Length: 123
Ligand SMILES: [Zn+2]
Image (cartoon, rainbow, N blue to C red; front, side, top):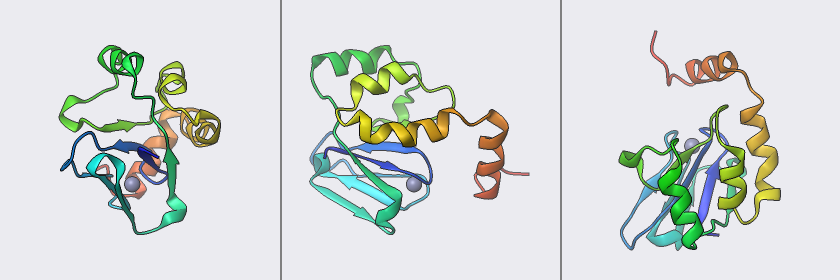
């Protein structure tokens, strides 16, 4: 495992350095020190992932437009997420695929309602 996925906020988190602490938006889980330290409130909401960290993956990161560089170390799975990218990036893709499907098959309205219920959207 060098990354984790939070089933609640649909984020993939990884830690790329010694003191790089990375927590998911809902606060359920975190990863630290290149994946050596992982913590959670509810383990059932967490999926362990193995990311491809070779040269290809680094190139993919640079090409991938869903990345917010201010949140380096975090991917947010959205209905528009690029399946091909994640297939190449995640070594244990088959294990992750059902969770990915749950998000990408949702409509934008479903996602909005879900976010609203969690208080992530104002109004
Ligand atoms: Zn979360």
